[in-house]
View 1 (cartoon, one colour):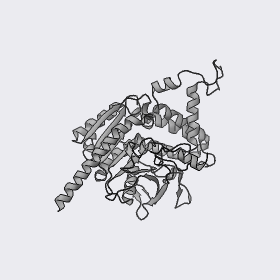
View 2 (cartoon, rainbow, N blue to C red):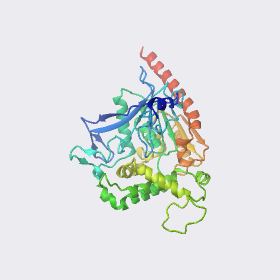
View 3 (cartoon, helix red, strand yellow):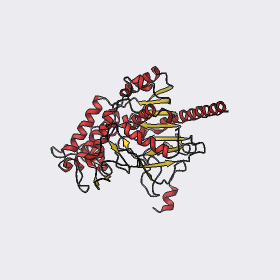
View 4 (cartoon, rainbow, N blue to C red):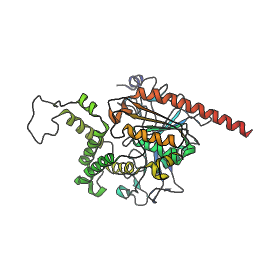
Length: 400
């Protein structure tokens, strides 16, 4: 496909071709992590869509999920086969309208898509950090994002939005940096990960540890622990689906025969087996095994209630308007967790809207079923921005 024909295939309501960006933070003073360790300088990979207005009050920060990255919308090249991971939601006239908002998305600290992580070179040793990289929390990731926003000259965001691990970041941001965001949109997430979720993460990490190529985390970049990481992805991917979606898409159908093979070593006899193996193989081509260890453990550690002794007391520290969204088929972050969070926010006297969305895709619904999501997010951001403009007008009047 020629460049011109590829460009013509990009929808008019897409952000189009985008340029990855990076910056270096914490050069003069290292970041003090929740563990007490320090880290700096820190390179942050990010992308922006739309334009920052003169008042610098139209910023919306998008927090990605566990294995996501900064490439949330548009394409890097005209012939890219796929756009960014939330492209249907972000763009001119879309749910997060880039005609109205300046959208920012950054790869998290500890990631492997351009931001400093265990695969980065330690400037003190000249070698990869590997497992000498310091332990991380969701709060550490948010501290880096918060500093990135300040470096872009934005004092207060119109909103912060994210699903799953991204939703945890949103909650941490709203509580720890209450003056930096007007709205917090939490999707398919919760104030902590359940014991069942921790258990799935533990099994995934064990799969990586058990791979002979893991080598205590100091594996050869040319020979990473592919089998262990692929197995970890297969395990996690099951939690992202729902029973209905698996049954509808795969059922008990065989992959390439109408008869059982009666071969115990045949790994992809059923279509669901073939699908999971495919997901595992794709994943190892783009993700770092050590990053997976650090980020899943950060999810395990997250507990919003620990900031102030109880969930309601922690929520009381926030000043943002909240939108909490769950899915009826999500069993990784079930609706019960969203209701618990909503109740705590109400107890703390916060402005909060809650909605359970119907979708058969399970936890991954927020990445797949975009139209219902956009219909809720669009007016919420519009109302937030109008409220912020009234607040700014009152401030100007009071100062005169």
